[in-house]
Length: 358
View 1 (spheres, rainbow, N blue to C red):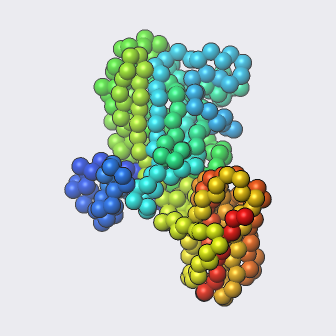
View 2 (spheres, rainbow, N blue to C red):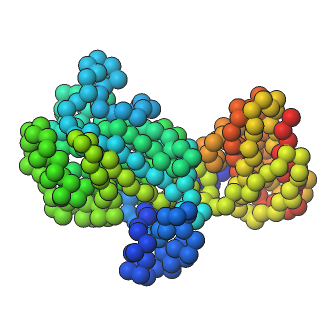
View 3 (cartoon, helix red, strand yellow):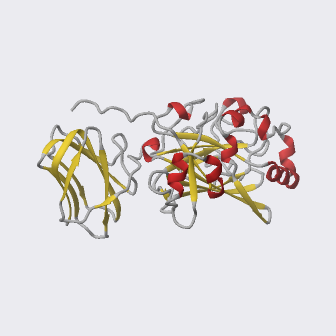
């Protein structure tokens, strides 16, 4: 089969409080506000991605506590502890949580130094860097340090969201990356004032640049990325919600998931390049999980993945022959939710899709 056409450019999105609905006045915002996810009523608006900056993660470690290096001197760096909770929500599925997304963060430490790069003399170190996968609630949680100051930039933390841990090149711009969401988090002045008063080490960095004086904050929608921070003792907790389309982070189309029941076939018809996402829950102790597409006309391709939605480029297994005769088999599948993406490489009419657990 010839190579599939890459997914089109997309617009990344952010979540705003419901009080902002009237101010937005957009068709997209008002339609989403009618069906909020859970108790957290939220309106979604178009937002701007940003640059990864010159010091992105390189082969980042999957870990929660980022305050120290993973080798060499593993003593945590000095500074204000910050528990950061970033929740990834599905813009096109009523702002439901997206589990299994990879959230990658990187920032400087209290005095403005980044790890891993020669200009700071920190090659081989990886403090304040790492990634986590979102849980069932869509949250990736980190224990890091409140970022310090360096010349020309407001206090910020870089982050990306994608389907798998992959490197981003220095100064990559999220607006030019089809399967990665890239942006930066910021803090209000009152929070920064409190941290800099409470932890003298922050005075060793460059004089602070206020958010409004930072050109990236101003041009790339920084006001929509202010982390909500609370304090307990000498530690801080920051929370923020980010809404995306699944296709924008390489996790398939943002659409409702159709459940599959073992042994019960479904009839499927899709237009050219259309796709449909399915899921099936696999209990412990099963010997095999099989997905089969057959019959009808056209050319449907299957992509399967455990725990999160696949795409045509990111999957655990695929079957993409030149007809509707496609099969994917998982031997001794681990318990969990399996997602199946059916993509119409050519229009599919009256095909039969069957999932079987044995």
